[in-house]
Image (tube, rainbow, N blue to C red; front, side):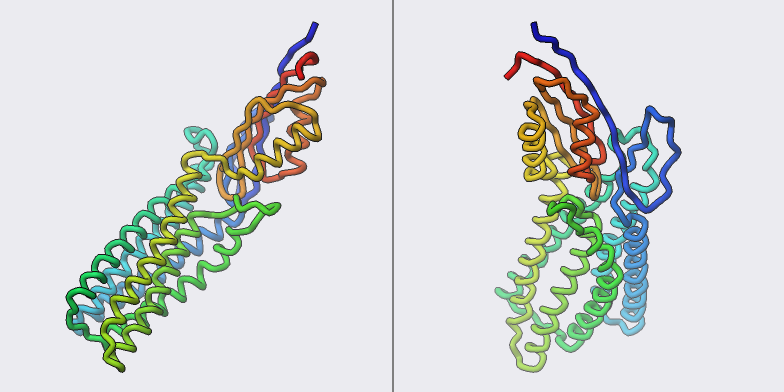
Length: 328
């Protein structure tokens, strides 16, 4: 007669660069699943927002003083980037502030993905508006003060390059790959960086187009360059929306990693996987719940240790083992 019994094991671990919250005892754990370099990323996002805000105020001030609508318009446009960078910094702050909040069952690591999703939608809407306006300009050309516009584009490019330099280190760090997988990405920093790069790219296109129009009389280059920029921004926006939405919907964090885990459990440990759930908890942190049927009396703790040894980014692991000697 077969003897069936179930063993459970639950554990989680976390790596981060801030002081962990107070532990509640050996039988409970705090769910802290923030990315490596979280505090550094928060500081850089805040610094980039402040730098952009200062340039925005200066530009609007000079626009009012010189009665330049071009300067005023670009200053207002720059306010949207202050908002995007401020949103990124705010998400880091909220995630850090709520690391000990028990209402978030799996920690506060997804605040950044929520901010990235919202930021990407705004970026996509911006691309659509630019495309519509550019198409109208192609159909019905209007007078443009190319000299003033060229100056604004150069100023905008300078601001974006400064912001990009501030964000670059955290962006590169947040895109580290663990064991060949991409689930260490920080979508929040990625969203902030994409906003800056998108505006820098459009500034470069604008400078080329405006210079051609100003010096060569090729006015058609301005709306065409804007359409190209809108297409690039829309593409970046789509990718960011897709990636952040998959995290927010708890989709399989990494199908390749799921297959590797299944191979380890079935091939090397001889168990049958009855159920497996892998999802992202935060940058560089994965959650795993797995139910196994094993012909041998293997402990859930042994399975968990084998998984963590092979994949240390599995920060929250729950294992259930049903031993069934007659099962095949």
